Image (cartoon, rainbow, N blue to C red; front, side, top):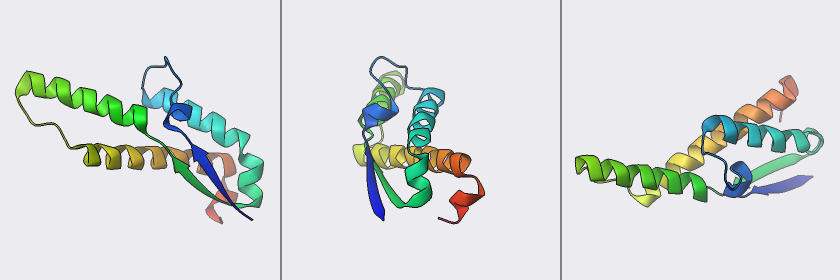
Amino acid sequence: QHIVVALGGNALLKRGEPLTVDIQRQNVRDGISSLSAVLRSNTVTFVHGNGPQVGLLALEGAAYQKQTGAIPMQLDVLDAETEGSIGYMLEQEIDSALGDEGCKR
């Protein structure tokens, strides 16, 4: 069976949590742990949001621009950057949860 799992950006970073890689990774780990049985017996496609992550990078870019005058990266670039990093965290935690079994899927 093919299942689509949708994770909102706020599932990866809960309201009030600092946006750190460690916290996001733990939230991803918790989610993958909850889905391990589904992952083992199905083909799964993950889709995810990235609003908080893009927002942080936009704020960092604005602060950098204020200090240096450098033009911040465009929103589409920030979107791509966060999509890649979130996908990477998902892949890492799925591989960790499923071990060798995950490599076959």
